[in-house]
Image (cartoon, rainbow, N blue to C red; front, top):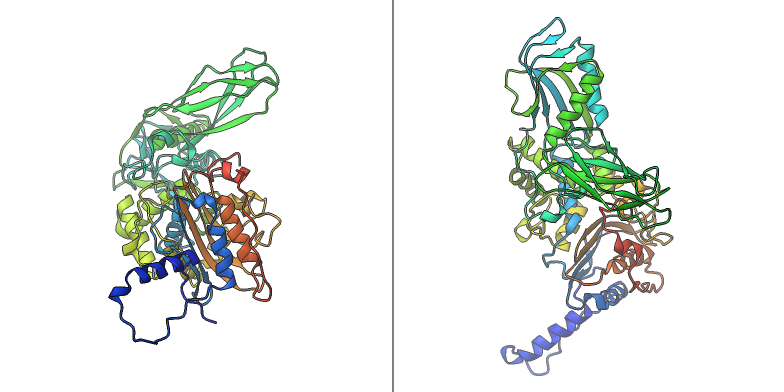
Length: 523
């Protein structure tokens, strides 16, 4: 049976009322039969019930469900309405990156020079040039230093130059909130950067905290990686055992001064807090200089930002994982910095312009090429942190359908969070949701979360083995309807045409998943 595009039962009532109100404008021969009303399918009826949740009073929701094989629309509630998608934006960015850069593309970071090396001495400046690697770790800069040491270099006469000119100097995305800037999900975008661990949160460092030896003594702090760029101002003290942990760690705007206040109870475990870095290219260069020193290479000059001359020769290179491999930390953990780096890299590769505008043109053009009506959406960044992004649930399902036919689909599909799987790099942002239901280890989806925004879009297989794509975007609510999203996912996974399936009742109280934004590392 072929289903017509879905109009909700409430929508049918509204349409009927509108027709009655305009009856004077419609002529019909006497005795002609009235048009038959569209009969809602059982699946449509159950989905309608879920969207009657009181949390949607005064708010908006778009929900589209389609057959993943044929593209047939099985349900459509306001699927053409533009909504704020939060991190569902990453579905557009990631697919465009896999297409444009390719699954095998690698970022790189180079050490270069124009001056000669004589008797182990580089008689001039050493240039550290970044080409956008968002996965560069301290160990990668150590590797670069080891290559230079192996080449016999023992001294740099000049300065260490930090070059991030592969991208432009615009560090933060369109309309990003000022009060998000200190936090790891809103780090500055630079072509030369550094991540503190294998979550690959580029442009951030970790402040580790430990209680002091006695009550009242200062809290002990450690920077990971060690660096001289971040300046810790510590007034935090050690509280009595069992007292509240009130530690607060936050960077001052426009500086690398990080203030640590509050109290940590005696006996507490090591705490970790990620902080963003102002001008991350200088942070990367500082860590590199330390690596050079550890390898016995002395730098006589200072660290300063500048461009590398075109005549410079390469002395060492570090390469990243592939873009296909990057999809796992990017999508599983919903990493904003990966999204924005990919956007600028697409601009640099496809248009020789490492800017948001050039990169977003590439993303938009890819979406258009696979059937998205891009005249009805707006992309303002690559991650969805911007509140200017507007897409439709229909456009998201267009992307999901098209991706299935790409040669890189399986690697990308596997990188999506998987419902109910507790492994952090399998379940990702869905690891605590829909556990022990038919959706667990079945539904592959991308979450989205901002204040007043929640979204879930992806793939799910019904009990009959029918694969579906779906997109659900909710905006402007006061109480999170995330449990309704989960109920939709479970209903679709449970669905069979052989029996009546009743949707589970969404939880009206706030759950742990509701309280956890997708960028909260503790969740």
